[in-house]
Amino acid sequence: MTRNDTRAITSIDRAPESGGPWRRVPWRSLAIVVPLVLVFVALSAAPNSNFLSAPNLRNLFDQQAGVLIIAVASTLVLIAGGIDLSVGATYMFASVICAKVAVTVDPWLGLVLALVAGIVVGFVNGIVSTYLRINPLIATLAMSFILAGATALVQQGQLLSLIGPQYASFLAVAKTPLLGIPTSVWIALVVVIVIGVLLARTTIGRHIYAAGGNAEAARLAGIRVNWIRILAFTVTGLAAGLAGIIDTARTTGVPTTSAVATNLTFTVLAGIVVGGTSILGGEGAVWRTVVGVLFIALVYNGFNLLHVDPLFQQIALGVILLLAVGIDAWTRLRRP
Figure (cartoon, rainbow, N blue to C red):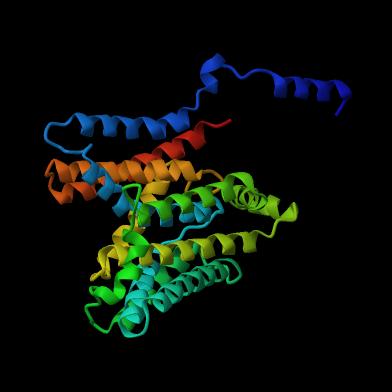
């Protein structure tokens, strides 16, 4: 290549993109934020919805605390080029362990063991999907079945309930109001900030993007892709365990059916994808996931306030998820 060719390429690279200032508009970000704002305004204006009442908003964020914690951590896995279908099962397993140990031994030991269980599950998911080269979708789906059986073994059909003065200090983990907001919401906010900073401002965050964007190029650049993905899975397992603990303390009990785990898994994935994180890896952000989760939460909350049949909630979630995946595929095809 001659010097003139090099100068020509450089000039092309520096040339302004066609389309003028409109090309600088963050359309992808607007596509996430605008629907959230529209739903918020519509629910606020709806007659007799009580959407803007303090109790409704407080309950809304309280109920979404666990989902947010899992979703922002799962964002790391998707960006790194993986997927985790076991987050709901991990959440339920940690919740049952926490409640079982709390009832039989000590609540704080239950909390520690639930966190350890989440870390172990996430680490195993990472090892199986990287070094054993099993597709993460299959690996984590298999893990969800394993955890469902393990949860049943631990629970033994017992109705685990943490009602009584001996559990008051443990329940305060999620229920203590601070500035009128439950502790569960504050914990979720801290997790969002920590993972957001990790992803956007650290070397590990850059490596996560690189691992999902082009794993081979990342390896050639000296990035330990397998360990980055294992780290992402481990953080997600820890987050699922933490969410299980918070919801155990918040509701003073544990989920009674496996459908809870399944619904949670797909709600988390829907929130991440709706938020604009690509299912193919390499793209996404924590703030987008937060917006996606809140958007779905507002839709559900609006349906409940307006007394819409719950069956339509599932239909709406499916339609929203299809649209989000379709938009992601369309934007990728339009790229030069």
